[in-house]
Structures are given as structure tokens and as C-alpha cells.
Image (tube, rainbow, N blue to C red):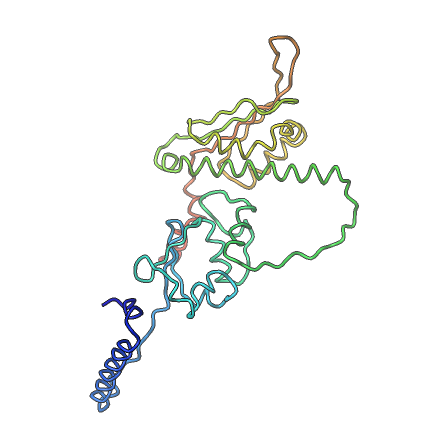
Length: 303
């Protein structure tokens, strides 16, 4: 009978089962009393496997319960073990992003919330995505102290700075979405560059929208870039070179091409626009790869 079936038996029958089990245990102890040195203590396996979105992490329950106010600390507390539903043995499935979970594990193992650039992941991750994941797992974070600025900032500068940060974050999200969409082709096929072109008009909304290779992501990406249809041109006009340097410094393998041009209309007149092309390069430098790969550690241990 499965252990869970005990909870369905009448109380008196359950007591009988306990009494019989207790009698058998007492009998076994008496038989072994003369040779107690052969009795080995029972070791409870504290190890668990978390399958997070298909990526498996092996750790100990005590790693999580050391932080009882977090979601996983509460989940694996002894008092809540009846609520657990392992998929097999000590393996538990959590339907979240397995790449982002590296940051969560970093907190449990070090007690510190890592910065975005302190963990190497296979796909680009934005600060907004990281904050959302930390909030989901109830990871505590120290709020930064409010420092009075030494220099007054003009409200116009604040607005532009805020919009520019949001624009960069939107482009990072699009790059991440494109990589995940074509991940298999990108890894298996050589010479398989992935690219997207966005065209921003000076006084018109976004009109041209091209993804190569073609995919069904158009609606999803349009939703991300929609807030910048009318201001994308202004942001690129003032900061195209700065944005390009940002992406080149923070994400390797990105080819950025931003061209300002004029388009002459059929009924007369002219409108200025920016063609923004972002390509994920399929080149792979083995030397650079080994610097950030798990094989580096294995090579160091073996040699």
C-alpha cells in the first residue's frame, strides 16, 4: 500500500498499523542488542534536484531552508513536505526560466544578490527580467540608499534618459527572443546569421518591419517596440553611436548597422528615417568560448 493511503484509513485502523510496526521495530532492536556495534546510523539524503524549465540544478534542502522567508525556503521546510510533488524520487519541476535561475542559485549559495554581469548565461538577460525573477522567488534585496544629488538635473534630461534606457532594454528583449526562436538552427547550422530590421520615420510611426529568417514573432516584437514608434527616430538621431557602443561592449556577436537616409514621397516632399539592422553573428571563437565554459573548470581540475 502506498504511504499516502494511510491518511485515508479510519483512525483506529491507523493506530493498529502503527502499533504493529512499533512491535516489529522493538523486536528487531532486541535481537540486535547483543551486537550493537554493527548497527549503522540512518543517513537522510538532503540532496534534491530542481528541474527549472528543463535545466537541472542539484543542491541540498538546507541550502534553501537557510533562508526561510524565501519561496524555496518555505517550500522545502520540513513542515511543508506534504505539499511537495516530486516528479521522480527527489527531483522537483519548476516552470520558470532555467537560465535566470542561475542568479537565484547564486544568492542561495553566497547570500548575495549577483549583479547582471556576474553570471554568464547562454542568452542575453535584461535587468527587468532578473528583477521579475528575484521577486517571484521572494529573494530579499537591499534597497539602495537615497543619495541627494550634488547637481540638479533638468527634467528634460531625466525624461530622455528614462526613454533611452527603456529603448535599449526593448532592443535587448528582441535580441533574446530572436536567439531563443532560432536556437537550434543557430547552434547546429554554420553560416546561419539571424537578423532584424526596424525603420523609424521622423514624424511617422514604425512602418517597415523585417525578420530574417521569416518567423511568427512579428506580433510579439511589435508589442515590445510599439512605445518607440514615434520617438525612435529622435533617440537614434541623438544617440545611435552611443547605443551601438553599448551593445558592442555588453553583448559579443552583435552586428549593428544604423543608417540615416531620406525617402522621397510619390506626392512630393521628403521624409527622413533611420534603418536599424541588428544581426546575431554565427562566428564562434573556441578560445573565448573556453574562458566562460564549464569545460574550463574541468580542464583545470584534470591538468
